[in-house]
Image 1 (cartoon, chains in turn brown, yellow):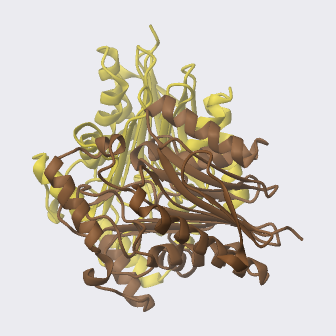
Image 2 (tube, each protein chain N blue to C red):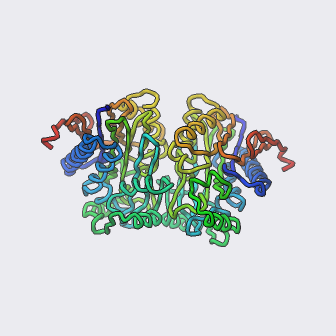
Image 3 (spheres, one colour):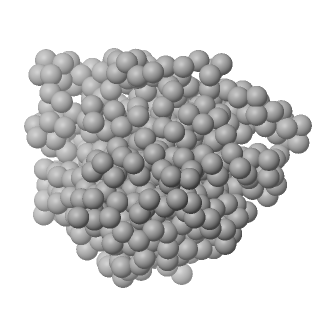
Length: 313
Length: 313
């Protein structure tokens, strides 16, 4: 029997101080909820889905409710989920009407022969599956609207967003290993404020925003989506774990390589096949939390690490 | 000065005998056209774009004109292009109105901060860029309509298409190395006949349908898109070349791994940083051709290899 573990993130960027407590509580709560699933002997796939659903439902994060708005003020959400035992994967991109994109991604994986459904096709599939649909009034928060207004005022380019504190890109994600040693991962996002209509970042791209393989480990990525795609960041990180690197070293090496090759910043969470946990970020901050042994450890700034007993969360 | 080379493919599947001459002439012509660009000292990026445009324009291939139709009888095309020197990439997915998706992908790479644009957003961008738009009357061929009718008659699942000769999935692609040693690759497709509306395969996914890095090599993939995504086939193959494998060995190892892990069949073309060429397929047939030294070599069945002088094409 393996010791079950889960790690989650709530995005890597210059998270403003007024969001600090909200995001930390949010990632701790999600990690704890995922861990309770694992403790019952359930699959890592169930744990990452539950953890990501909780992060999607929490408006403080840029995924599901609270998603960033595109240049036309619309929500376009992306999500992916992957099973490290079978390498099965499901993803959706450019959807605007589903409460929990990660669960729709799981249905793509389990109920179709496909991996990725986009736009109108993904919406038709959601209707067929009878998943919970929601309107813009639910998905769009006051904060997301203000972020778009701020962006428009400053007319910054998407690339520049990473050099200031104007706008967030707090993708969420989770990686878990269950008592059978099976690894799963999931990532979900509303993308970047003021993105071009139809822009898809790394989140729903298997190999970029998430990847897992029981022979190596599991990864969820966050940060500058275009950079992450260009280096296939998640697949690269799992490859390093396959070659024997620890999760921690694999995250550091892959992010350092991304910075060097494409000058991109981001964050990673990972669990290796041996059950060791890793997280690292080259952005100003990343919200992360992991749970094992009835303890939840979390942090935001580099070097941060607070441990809580689950009963005290 | 490096010796310039280009390799192209016209899809890996059970290509029927009546298409044999058409696809072979098509890939030879595309390889030759790309090579003429390289011989003028131009960039590998220009060569792969020209070669893929020619394959898109040729209705015998499932990309651009001649694209397979989805379950509702619509065209939904995907394409990607990548620069191995900078790791810059551009892609489009789910577009129905552009003559040359690969050129639109290149515009995403060069004219936006993004990598991937989908659906309506990609269409808006195409309009902004003033690219050549075409109607369904141009894109949809009699053959594509018949394939969909055949499919509907037999009601086969997409997975089953690879076990019979009913329907094609002849993605096209190209990989080139220019006289400066810069590598580029591109892939374009209309997808699989009777695919679900909104289904996106490997073609536009950086790391799946294509990847290149001057430090390793370049790759374009074809075959069962969902399997290719699940193993990040192109990124995996480039990683093997980075570790010192030849292009040929890297293609064989990556496809053998895909067969073992996810039971998927497909084909690969590759050029390594050292300029050696590789191609391999685990489907019944793959149309391929490469050009160097004013010779074009091509084949379709396993073991096939015919050499033509370019002046005799």
